[in-house]
Length: 131
Image (cartoon, rainbow, N blue to C red):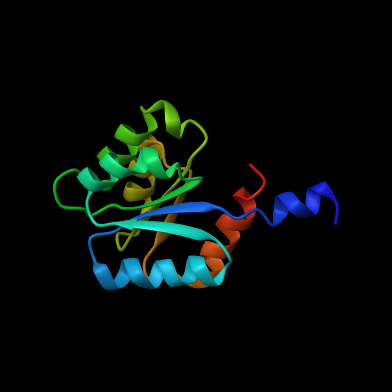
């Protein structure tokens, strides 16, 4: 196997921040099914407390979180030195250009409208496994 093949098969560390427990677990199962590792938290505050010790490659952030919303959480995490290389993915039930624009302004690299299918997640993970 070439070095390039090894990079494509790298196991990613994915942080899931989702206040809906069923949605978080379903996303975790998808990530696990795709061969990657995940850590799940259910609030922005918990994400800030625990994220640095997990050092995620990818952060999947729900936009509609209680307290700090996903836009604010993305900005807070991106300000931390441990998150310079983290890829941020907004996941939300809010579709539309206004929310996509706000996500881009907050620093998200990708935007997924819920409900999403495993192929959408797989594409993002595959595109970022060699980062």
